[in-house]
Image (cartoon, rainbow, N blue to C red; front, side, top):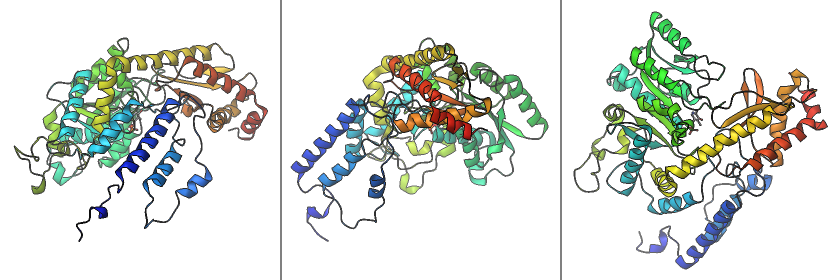
Length: 490
Ligand SMILES: *Cc1c(COP(=O)(O)O)cnc(C)c1O
C-alpha cells in the first residue's frame, strides 16, 4: 500500500509526455498528408519482425522510446490509405477521423451500457442510419466491429424469432432451419450459420444470373424443395454489393418472396448499401427499407478508420428480446449512472464495448452525406472508366459487367495460352503488390482467375487507374512473368 501517486501508470513528467505525444501526432499527420506518395504496400521487414518477437518485458520503455516504436510502425499498413490500393474491400480512412480517435481514447468509455455520452452518441448514429435506410422509429441498431458480427447478431434475432425465444435456453432441439443466399454471398453468412448452430450447409447457395445476381426462380424452387423435404426455411439473405463483382440481388423481388413465404429478409449491404447515398443509385437499394435486418460497414465505403460496422433490426423489441439478459450486477436504474436504458449490451453479445460510435459520428457529422456520397459516386464512375479502357484494349478482357465499384478483368495478351492465363494474372497481381506500385487482388469468376479492382478509395484518381493498366500491360509482356506463368499452367 502506498499513497505515492508515482506507483500509478500516469506520466511522471507531463510536460515531457506532451512533447512526445505532439511529436507522434506530427508523424501520424505526416503519414496521412503523404498518403499519395511512395509505395502502396511494404512488406514488414525482417528486423521489424524480430522486434516484435521479444520475451515478455518486466521493465517498460520510457514514453519517448515507446513513441519511437509506434512511429516505426507507421509505414507498414496494409496499404489501404494509398490511392492505388484496390484489393478486397477496404476503406481508405480519413485524417479527420484521427480527431475522433484522440478524443475517444482520452474518454476511454465502456459503451456496453450506463448513462454517459457514448450511449447518446451511438443512439444518434443509429437514428441517422435508420433515417438513411428508411427503417421505422421502432427499429433498433448496434455498432459492432463489422458486417461479420452484424450478421451474427441479425441472424440470431431471425433464428430466435422463428423458434420462439425459449430456444435461447433450450437450444435448437433438432429444428431443421434453412436459409438462402446467392452463390456470390460473402463467407460471413455461412459462418454466421455455423456460429449459430445451424451449420453452414443450412445456408443454401442459390445460383446467379450472368450479372451475378441471385436467380429468383431458383430461389423459389429451393424454398419449395426444402419445405417438401421437411426443412424449415426461415431467412432470405440478399446482398447489396457482392464482394466479387459488386452485384446487387433483386432486393424488391426478394422482399416480395420473403413476405409471401413469411421468411425473415436480411440484407448484407457491407459496402454496397451505402450506394443509397448516391441519387442515381438509390432506387437499386430502396428495398432495403423493407428488410427485417441490415448489416453494413462504416469502415469500407464511409472510410471510418477501422473498425466499425452496424446492424439494424426493424423490430427493436425482437432484437432486444434475442439478447437481453441482465444479471443483478447489471440491473437498470431510472436515475444515476446505471440509468440510460436500454443498454447496448441488450442488443448484442458484447458487454464491454469501445466507443466506436464516436468515429462514426465524427465522419458523418464532419463530411455530411453529401461529400461521403460524392466520393462513392466518384468510385463508381472510376470503375466504369476502367471497364471502358479494358474493353478498348485487345490485350485485356472484361470478366464481369461493372455494376457498382468493382471491375474484374484479366490480361490475355495476344499469344498467351489459355491454360497459362490464370497463373499469369495471379503473378501480375503479386508483382504489382511486391513492387509497391498498386494493390489489386484476385478472385475466381466462372472458373477463371481475374484481376479484381475494387474502388472504395476516396484518394484514387483517373491517373492512378491509367498507371495501373499501363503497369499490368508491361508485366503481361514481361518475359520473366510469362515464363513463370508457362511453368505454372493449369
Ligand atoms: C466485407 C464484407 C463482409 C464482411 O464484413 P467485415 O466488416 O469484414 O466483417 C460481408 N459482406 C460483404 C459483401 C463484404 O464486402
